Image 1: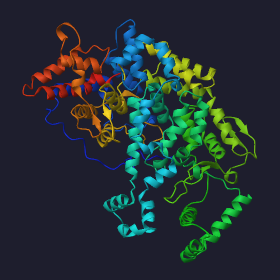
Image 2: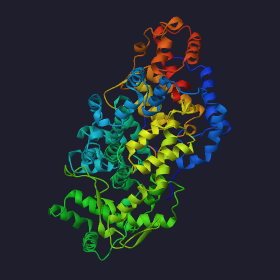
Image 3: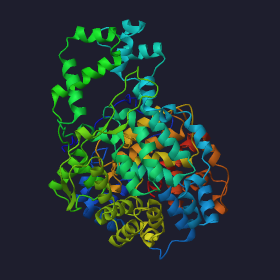
Image 4: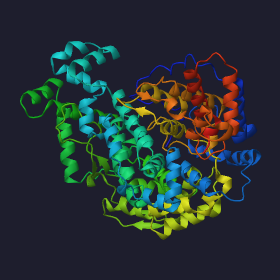
Length: 640
């Protein structure tokens, strides 16, 4: 499959103005740029980080592994013989949550790391009702696909809706965006941009406010592993259901079950084009009847087709659908599509070095012919129970004999071919090794230790892909507790934004924040917005360059200064006198302790005080806001 390597904008999310400057807060002092550049140099070395804001696909990241390893060696590693209990608790929280707050650290130390981890591995035991209340601000995330099409119709559906009613005059000719906005207001509807914004808002609210933190962290990991792109056609309306139906319920279940759920979900079938993959059995009665009906319809003139509607033989929505099907058949002939088969083996299971060949790709593609969906889009007049659903069409399935990785699939079968392929791949040692390596890279170190990868892979195989057991093994492995892994990974943009909102106790209310969405886009990790099947990368070097770090600083300053819509932060709430001795009553120390609990922040505090000393004219409130922003935007906060 050939992928366009230029990152596409996220369709359905309207452009918004950049986050406004944080006035009257002064520009970041040159010293902070120096700290950022030191961090860049430590993590990327002379080769430098990628110039683009959005990183290259993970598939290309392997070429930089040696450079990253050398850079990390030059940067140095912790010299402690072993992590203290506090440091180990903090390390667990930093990697297994979207941000460690002082109360989280206190809770883990009181409960014990093992007990905390066990509780998080059983999210059904954790009350998350407070999150449920917040999710009401994002109703689109809980709607059915049919309701989404009715409430947030795409421009083409909006035009058809207008043509059927009294609002047709608003859409005369070729409507521009202003005309569409006017019509939506008249009809009480909203656009797809609002819908996608609510999807992103709900994802972020879960990351910030959920008590089931490990579930949300693992949902983010597995969504990237089985990535789909919100900007591709119908997936705009399917992506939220995909996460809720095929990812989140399985993060502590069996890997094979998640693999089946993603393989059969309309979002994945549409994203990787498998819904069009077919080898029609032209002798099947169903196929012959369907083709005859389409041929008879295509032979009618447009006036004769409209007469069928007037006679009540078909509905206006069926007329549109039939014209679309006929148009697609004229443009292309049915055939095998290898996109899903290739990504299934290369990304989802075996890995690029998993031992498969092009013959295996073709055989797997043949096994998944007939795995399709009821319809790729729903019109605004769809019945209330309409939905985009997976369906297996035996008349489109290749019934011939196939051989996958040396295993024969006997001829004459149907959906069993695909299910057997999924089982074969899910239980392969190559899959166990590939999954283990990705987990270690994401949660432990950018250059995975081979011995740790083997231990995690063994647990995967021994438990039949039990992801609860695999996740427990990951966070309790001696390699995870190695002091050389602490504070060595750079947070991804989503982790930076979520952790800043989380530790500052930001109140997000009233719907999605355009400012936060714009910040995520600028930083390069808008949820659901990665067009490549690899998903967003996990390696630090993919996210680090001087421009990216300054963008992170600007976001932090905008957050603490209250410049983000629908987000409220009060830095004064963290500036109460804390500490002892020389730091008692020091608001800078109080902020550092609140935002970076359990960390040695003396050097950071000195840098913040020096910055404030260079600007004696700032009033107390602005100084507090600036100090909070500098700490959240500092290199210290970017590491975990």
